Length: 173
Image (cartoon, rainbow, N blue to C red; front, side, top):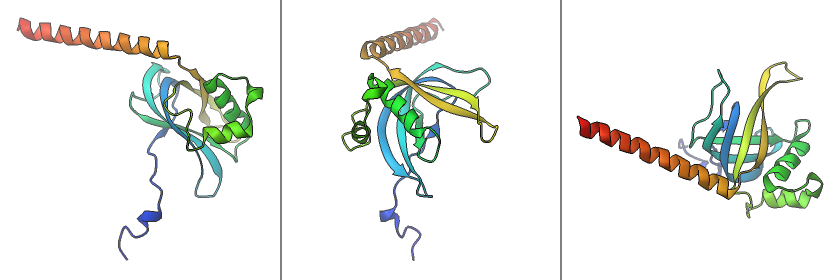
């Protein structure tokens, strides 16, 4: 029996962190339905941080390029309500328009939300069950394309300015 026997039947893991305190722009990579080792069904929103908008003093924050995820666990109170709000906010539709069929499409192979840039906030709260500090995830909105383009242009201009300053400093030596 070899060390890698059975790897063909094993799913690769997604190496990501849960959303930390702060506000981020994230690109949705995929929204998938799965179950954990205990066979508890969940939906995972797998994303990549593309902008750190705001951080909370004294709290660890994500970095641009970091893989993050948000889970909607079926064994947690309110998971359907939270998933419904996620879809409504990201798709820009009224919550009463969200159906089980729409949810099935979101997690399907079609992946209609993949590539969307969304604003995600990690908010601290105290768990009612455990009394521990936990971070809740709020999907505020899909960031409009003009806003994303304006941010990219601003970041590019800052990068060029920094490059020019570095070049001028090296030339002055």
